[in-house]
Image 1: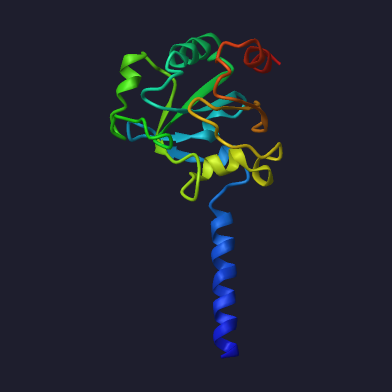
Image 2: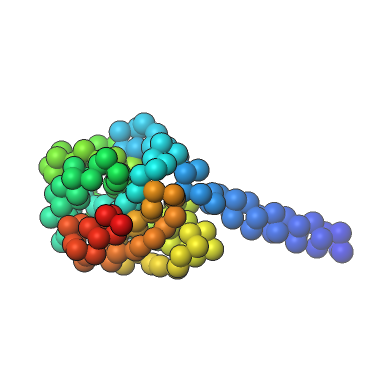
Length: 178
């Protein structure tokens, strides 16, 4: 019986360690599937700021797509915006491989395939973004679509912006221009 309990506890310890191992310590270690099936390798963005945004296909803040695109066009020499399609708020009509809104809003910044940004099935990159033990800034929760996370040119999370904060707001512009 004692041997059996030892094996069970060892197995549970291994599982908890394996789950932690799913979250890299650096943003540059992440590789995610793009909406078009290619790979988005964050290592390619070293030296640039990265703005990560959970993006739906239809939402109350849908005007933010054009604002994000304008921001990307203005700062693309030093900023990349990566939109993560999400279905966490149950309003997503499109398919994983053919995000209709990319065409509707003329988006040219990288789009990742649908991921979970909350709960038990949260994507590892969102664990990194929302948990201080990984990002070394703070814990946060995804409040709704268009939550924004700004990572500086050294790969450090520096700001979290609520969904209602527009992409062209002075606080986001100021953080990008720092």
